[in-house]
Amino acid sequence: MSHRMHTFLIAIAFVLVTDSRAFPQTPKAGPATPPNIVFIMADDLGYGEVGCFGQKKIQTPNIDRLAAEGLRLTRHYSGSAVCAPTRCSLLTGRHTGHAVIRGNKEVGGWGPEDPEGQWPLPASEVTIAEVLKARGYATGAFGKWGLGGPGSEGHPCFQGFDHFYGYLCQRVAHNYYPTHLWRNHDVDVLGGNHYFSAHQRLKDKPLLADGSLDPAGFDQFRGKDYAPEEIITELLGWIRAQHRDNPDRPFFCYYPTIIPHVALQTLPEWTGRYPEDWDQTSYLGEQGYLPNARPHAAYAGVISYMDHNVGRILDLLDELGLTDNTIVVFTSDNGATYVGGVDRAFFDSHAGLRGQKGNLYEGGIRMPTVVRWPGHTTPGASDATPSYHPDWLPTLASIAGASAPADLDGTSLVPVLSTTPIGRPTTGCIGNLRRAPSSRPSCSPAKTGNPDVGSPSGPTWRSTPRRWSFTIS
Ligand SMILES: [Ca+2]
Image: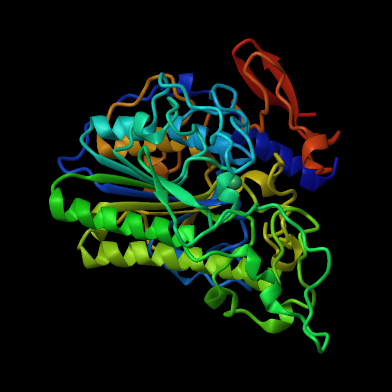
């Protein structure tokens, strides 16, 4: 075993395997006025894809600002290596050995008339939103839900959120120009868009008469109403309304943006910020999702647009005088993708870490994470304490002075945020579990096509009746 692999495996063992029973989550006396909480989660953003985590090509000045004013967590891990189980782990404080959503299990279908949604989060689960709502918080979610479709018990409005706007269904979120989004239980029609599949190919490169590329040949993969812009507009309006109508009531704003998850559908003004010579060839859809005339520039552009939206939130907090009493967290849900025209090597998307989305190697699960908590985090600091998404429920409950369920897997990071070392227990798991709790979990190398998944030298699974955990081979 190489030294690098050995180091990696130790890290996996240390981080991924936690047992909260050694750390009961005793509610703590909270402050008289709990802080507002803005929790931003990117979608498929790699560890090295923002400037403050080493990115050289993609401009992310606002996330970098957040890091300069806050704390970087340099060994913070996602709840899973794909979308839905990460969201479940994050919101319920349980790792994928205990969490009820363990894979992107679909409900409905891929056609425009098929029902939307993924396997719903059961009503019995307690989410961060429910914990904070019980403490008096206003709660809003904006972006990609993925834990239950329309009318299901997993719907965000049945899981503690007063207000939801965005995509309920992850499949629909493959298209940045959907025919509709959801506002609470109601369809919000995006009248400027017409339905088209987010999974298409161009047989031939579209050319002009002189043989040069015809950019208009890619226009069929765009609409007029750009969902990420609709979502950030709703979010900013909601924060503004909270401040106007309930200035003494703290809020929890959960922003699981769809960016930079493919399809590559970037606003032209953001693609145009990056060099023409980055893209000698177009992406015609060979690896799924949608073609793009300038895939490198589009990928960098959409991340910079996401960063711009982070900046709009920070600017609004400044404008409303809320910055000093608002904790802002930025993280991602899993590593960068390997499909849809994304070039991880070009961007060094994982800062040299092995693996990618869908992997349980570092590239799949170590997340670029920043926390700004004025008066607590040290500006410009970083901390390498292993931590992961299930830690956020007990952390935010502690900060808010709210009561959290006792049987969580996460551990409060409040000491870490104040740069105080904590010891961590050493059992638990992060998994990419695609099956029901009663069946054997799988990393499904055949499905992902990733040679790193389930390789002989990688983590393997061991099961007990209510518990899954890594063993290290
Ligand atoms: Ca994702």
